[in-house]
Structures are given as structure tokens and as C-alpha cells.
Image (tube, rainbow, N blue to C red; front, side, top):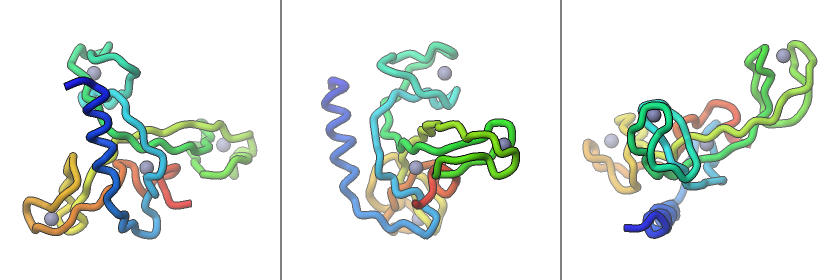
Length: 137
Ligand SMILES: [Zn+2]
Ligand SMILES: [Zn+2]
Ligand SMILES: [Zn+2]
Ligand SMILES: [Zn+2]
């Protein structure tokens, strides 16, 4: 199976409706990236991780832009100055895999469907949901 075919199949799965909570990431900017689970690193079109040499996995990711002060570790969605040190915040892209979560069992699945344990519908979410910039607007 070619990379392109895999991507189309994965993107087609994302049509599932969202039942997001108050602070949940809206998962509105998605993309396909190659991911090394071992190193938690995303790479471009390279099938082998440069660091650990394991095969990268093609995953659907949630891409969000936030603004951070690296010195104070502050994050916010809006541009501006750091509330603590008043230096201008730096724009940063934060990428994280999109997963399907059972809210009751806290189990994570790679694809949409029902939870193996409680048979409830799983919810599309991103791994960093609820942490800035992966928060609701
Ligand atoms: Zn690696
Ligand atoms: Zn600061
Ligand atoms: Zn469950
Ligand atoms: Zn997100």
C-alpha cells in the first residue's frame, strides 16, 4: 500500500462528530506526519528515525500554533508579551498525534469506533488536548 493511499484512508476516518469538553482542543488543523514513538519525534518524509533507527509510523496529527515565553514556560493562544517578564512571546507550532479516547475507561485507540472494554463510542482528541495551545479557542 502506498503512502498516499494510507493517508486518504486515515483522513476519511476523521469525519466522526466531535463531542468536545470545555477545554478540549478542537482538533481543527490536522495533517499527516511521520512519527517515532520511541523518541516522540516528528520527521518529514523519512521512514527511519534518524536518532534510534526504528521505522517511523505515518500518523494523523493535530497542529496548533501557540505563543510561548521559553524562559518563563508560559503559553497562550494570543500573540503578545509574556505576562511575567514582559518580553515578546515566540510563535511556536505544537504537533501531537490524534487519537480516539474512551472518556469512561481512559483508553486510547488509533482508529474511531467503540471502546473494547465498555463498548461506548470513542472520541476524537489529540494527545495534548487541554494543554495550551491545544485548548479551545
Ligand atoms: Zn526514534
Ligand atoms: Zn517570560
Ligand atoms: Zn471504554
Ligand atoms: Zn490538539
